[in-house]
Length: 213
Image 1 (cartoon, rainbow, N blue to C red):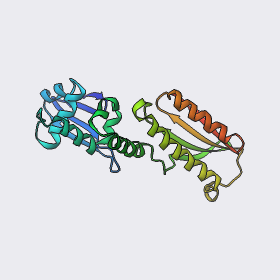
Image 2: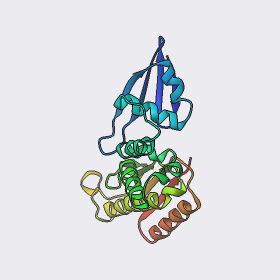
Image 3: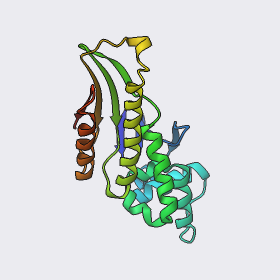
Image 4: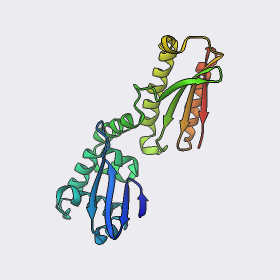
């Protein structure tokens, strides 16, 4: 079996048979898989443009025409907004500023899940809340990224301040740690934001721990 990974999709070959799979994104995020020919594999690997045309063909049974290409691209990213995170600078021009920001906000929220705790547990004698940030720090989406990350951190702080953990874990800890794991190195603004969070937590019984890639 041969597996080829690209930004946003995976192609698998076994005994001369090919399949392509990708995540749909959004609230009902799920993996979809389609069989495809060697010719379509070659086209999908040629460029990002060719890849999305192949995916559209597999989903709709129709090839994008020159006249409908921009509309088709808009509809493609509206239906799978998580794909906008691959290269937002090339996609931003397809939408109005308002719609682009709405789509990005929806997508980043679905990835960061600001109203959920990623994990909680006891490490040594610390109560540790894990926050995983899987997003790249790209200029076009940085403001929304920071906004939703701040929302999630605020919810973590509220969880600790309101002692929602006591019934399950008790309240006898040396420290309460918010442990942020970043999959990508943060931008300067991202680093400055994390420093500010650390300053806010200094006079409290909470500590921020940041794990960089």
